[in-house]
Image (cartoon, rainbow, N blue to C red; front, side):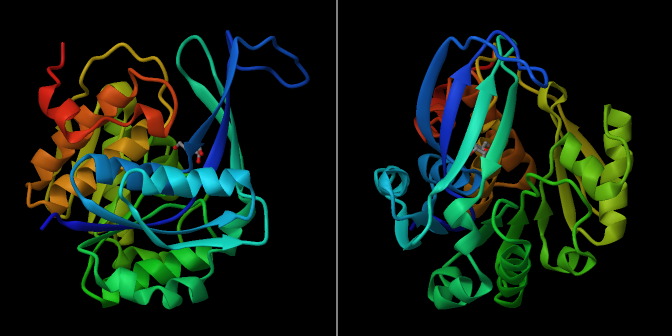
Length: 305
Ligand code: RIB
């Protein structure tokens, strides 16, 4: 039986333009292309975990519009269980994304239906949570729902992961005791710790601070600098795999989904981190959110240059 991962979070339709660079305030740029692509941090992590070997259920909300149908359909096409993806009377979540020639992006999200994922909805689908080995949350749904899901997961003895994305302020102090793996990127680690994170050394200091706040284990993803793993006893650096980036959208989501799938399948933490890094490295060589996420056989065949 494949390990069971439950993702609680957002589904967004990504409206993606490619432009030579990101626009400045008040500026109009001529874009090169436009595409609508299934995304949302929650849905991306669900797709990553499914393509990378886990049996996945998604808990979330879409609107009663065409985007909602497409977002749900994209998950069903990956054989993701969508019994807990509710259709609500609102517009589906959208993300407006600009990707520049240096493969960097800027994203504005409008939550729409994702805002209807309340603690009560989590309780309604408690049976789905109870079937999980690993539960993953992010921050594109209401904070009250995330806190409730983390604590419900902890109380049920599940392995609980939080990808605190996007983050602009510290987490509620009482969340930390419910989290097994806290997985921020550099800017999120900075927002959570209140410390600057712009190098390996400053990331180590921030990771130590997050452990002191109560996180059991922290993985800070550092883009081209790799990833940092910290627990109560030490800190380990995992260098990045060098690839030619086309689009970094959903690289973090691919890492989280891959790490969760590998850990749930019985890999060690170090093996699961390296697996997540390989999957994320492959994802940045392809455009879009869900279309960029590799399969298990892609990752197994991947040899970093
Ligand atoms: O992490 C990438 C995702 O962030 C995009 O798919 C977009 O929907 C935003 O949620």
